[in-house]
Amino acid sequence: MKTDRFSTITRRQALQLGAAGAALAGMPGFARQAFAASNLTLADIGVGDTGDWSKFTNATGNSVNVVSMGNAPSAVVNQLLAGGGMSNFHIVNIVGGMQEPLVENNLIRKLDPSRMPNWGKDAYISDYLAKGTPGFDFIGYGDEFYGVPTVLQGDSFAYLPDETGELDSYGALFDPKFKGFVALEDNYTTAGQKTALFLNATGQAKIADPADMTPEEVKTVIDFMIEKKRAGQFRVIWSSFEQAVNLLTSKEVHVMDCWEPMVFVAKSQGTNAKYAAPKEGYLLWAMAAYIVNNPNMGEADLDATYKLLDFMLGGWYGAKITLMRGYMTNPLAAEYAKAHPDEFTAEEAARVAEITDGVKAKFEKGGTWQNRWPTHVDVYEEEWQRFKAA
Image (cartoon, rainbow, N blue to C red; front, top):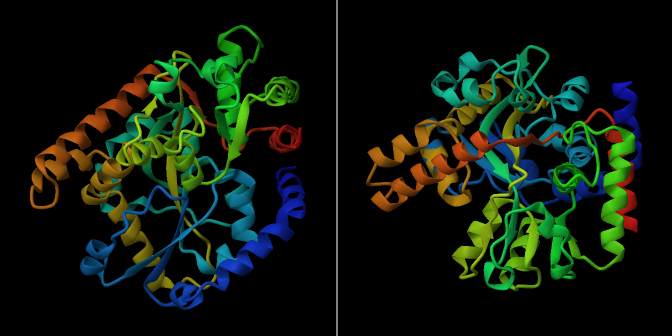
């Protein structure tokens, strides 16, 4: 059943993603770097790249080549299978929760945490991602670990308070006052699940589990979204980090379902943007760095890959990503930033601690854990296409 479900998606999308993979493989230097020993290719969705990997290279002798990849669930699977990822990537760093299709199709390797000294120092794994909790579904499958948690976050939506006033509900995404100035992410695991949270909280629908809806519940959510779309509520459905930032900085939209790093970038460019604290709660999630089951990976590359994953669990990487993206990363981050004034100013160290505390508060408030591969994923896919085509 699980293989059939995956195969259906593959058939539907393999051709277009295969073309994308061919283009990727044709990028200058891509193939040369991907296959070079200890020259690691890290495929990332755009939020895990510090822009400077020299600290890792100087310490290990291994270099890192970062390439971008999409984050939508079926696109991730197909980029590995049909887009050249299996042969070219060593690590994919994406939003976790993808273990079921990735493991069952032999696309990633089981982790050996003992090969990463910083794994045992990361108390967030036991605090938020322990076996038997919803968080474990972001890094584990069965009784084994497959993903290294690189960041944790609670998502909501962005808004421009100068245009909208203060907002504290996902209802702002559907409020007629903002008709034509709202954007949604092209991703049913974010926009769809936040809509379900809103409909449930306001009594407009009865949804037992917004994270894993029945086919009838998915249809109810999509019917509502189509009604809003046809009324002109949404200006655009965005699909890239840069597009989302531009929508905010140009003030083309005033309310947007998006990631908090986009607000960070917009603010750095002078836009007064805020990330909401919705009364319905947050969409909780964790990034997972998976080791790709690359048939070209020898023991030397595998050892280098584990060293890179351990580096990503370390204090320098964690502090950098927290500052750049506003995510909580690992318990070493704030401590490292404070202890290294030659690398982080006192203001930056304080900011790392402040952001970390802010994300912890989101997890305390709660909400619902994002579900990257719901039980009825085929229905989700089909209904989301119905929404986009409406």
